[in-house]
Image (cartoon, rainbow, N blue to C red; front, side, top):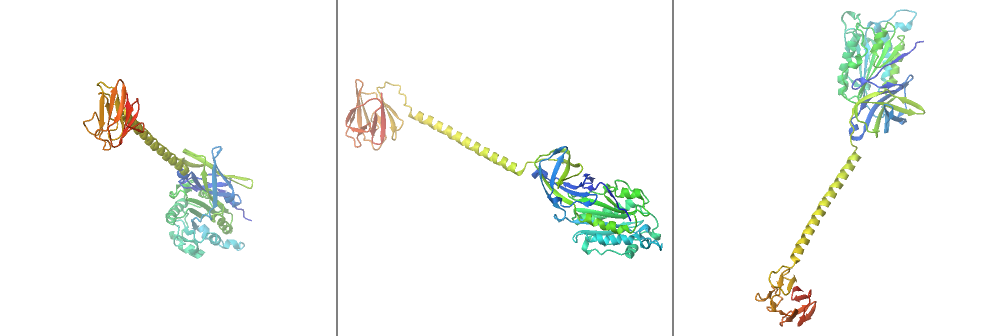
Length: 480
């Protein structure tokens, strides 16, 4: 009975940085475009263990750790399929002698069928696991050349791809002249085919790019440990690539197989008939079971260069964690709520300032008016001899001051009076004020409007300091 050997490597993450992998979580990609505006970090995380993908983590408790410090953050997780993300799958089949050849040993009927036969058998099972809308390219390679769409015709929706049979692979993939008995330059051919496929897959808008290589590791050149990381950048912060290598151990080069799968997952087939099972088992991985998009709203503000975070998940008493993942530089921003509060505070301060300025302006104007009114009401100074004065409080001559100099002064509308009052309600010679021995007497001279002293109509009355005298519309105050 054959034994399956699985080797887990570091899965490549855009932009071709080493993925964070420790325990059961692998960070596939990372996007911090929403961090400055709303403190959002997005991770695509692959959860798997030795038995395969770990499902059901969309309801787990997800967390982030910065160094030894857990970050205060809320998380929302969704499965890969729930996000309806497009996947592009490339399968490269070998048309080398070790895969197309048959063993005519009669005692082993399984070996009378070529390894390629079992490869195509497993590919049928794998195709059933690929969503109809996902893209599928089936290519092949021999010792001379690799073509990523040789057998599918182009990059198509998987339900439109017709898988080839053994005869077609042997016919259409025989690129080498003279029978193709030489060994391929494995790394060179694989990189060329994957680059060609990547340019097509990016145009189609896929986020998840899966490369499945079937090989025995036989090569004219040694495969470098970091060959997969030398591929171009995908140009999308949320896109990533996954590598799966199905290796035939019969007639294989184990070192090259290990190097070929260094950045991905190696499923080894001890016998050719195991190839169908190994390739078919990839369906679990290709479907995206165990892949989650996790959106973190980080309350602990991060900022600076060279930040490294660790993704964690807990469910049913089980703790899962990724390796330390370099997220690079994060630039903290101001949340919209904070911006709104700052704007509101600024507007409130501006309104307060405007009101304060207006109040101060009004206070200054009122103080100026009071000074002007006091100035107007201030009695005029008469330099000559004065025995009393009349200060006009109301009427056309308001604020005028008339000194009483003569023993007898006449008041009236006529300019000839000692106290001329330009008031049409005042008679031409309305009244008189006589002074005898510091005694002041006002007398009505048969005026029409009459004379009022302190609001009382009089014909003749003695005046005291401060008395109010009204003649028509004019009111005066008598001062000694």
